Image 1 (cartoon, helix red, strand yellow):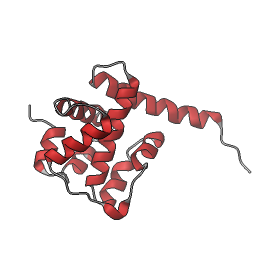
Image 2 (cartoon, helix red, strand yellow; image 1 turned 90 degrees about the vertical axis):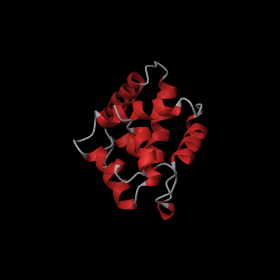
Image 3 (spheres, one colour; image 1 turned 120 degrees about the vertical axis):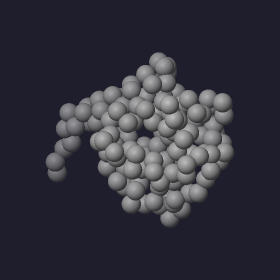
Image 4 (tube, one colour; image 1 turned 180 degrees about the vertical axis):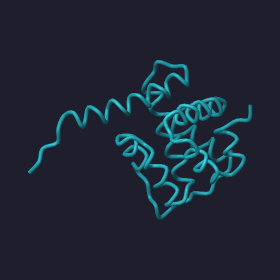
Length: 142
């Protein structure tokens, strides 16, 4: 039976840490636990709003460990979950353990960090499936 090389795990951890560092920097925090919570919640909120095909295409862009986070707890028989901006904020508050006032800044910062690591246009393709009021929360107009 083949054994898994330590280098494979180290690479997966290293790549996930690069993404987590980008999220922490976008959030202007050194609290990696908070950055992880924000990223996990952001990933789950997007995943649950997408169709199964779109969710799978999005996941293909994620590094291996974050793909596991993304799919953790996913029930494809219940997607896409229809929610508006208010429901998005409410669920984000609950899962990320933040205040409603913090949500717009957090989700736009996470979106910005994730965008750095995606192929051009891939994130926008996923975001286009969101209702306008939710999309403008994740990607505010400048």
